[in-house]
Image 1 (cartoon, chains in turn blue, green):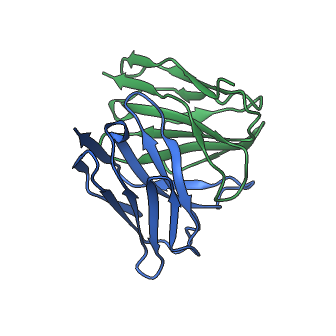
Image 2: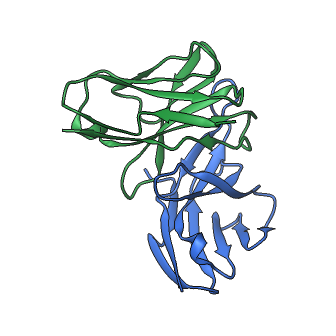
Length: 116
Length: 114
């Protein structure tokens, strides 16, 4: 059961353009929504995250838009650069693990390529 | 700080062999996690630990075992390797409990079982 659905699977954007990646979740118990960026041969790294009581969060060129009623959230990368070429994973987090750890449920990933 | 380190980077196993994937973090994080990443899929949680001596199962624990004798180390053991365990394995750690605890990932171990 895929609890976090992510699209598109791959995306090609011209330098300077806007990259948009969408995610949808099913479980309303999720209470934190991070995005991770992964370069080839590396582990994922936290890029930006949002709480469900906020509709938008912006950090530099990266913005998360969050629609709680639709159970959807998206990542917008403004002025996309070749250095942004990576795989992006949305995730949803909830504190269900014994002892306080958080369980991350990941989307299937989007391979972004920014062309010159 | 080296962060989260994993060894080996690559490994090829024959069916039925055993091995241990090593994970060490030098950030004094209590929470540690093992994930596997299959092509075209998101990461899935195998096991996690909330402190030395405490471990529990994640989504896909079958075929794996873990131990946590120190805060720093969280090895993952494969006892009887099967082709279905061909994957990239990531170890992660976090310092803050609750849903907002950022997880820091290691560089991964690429395992092939033939």
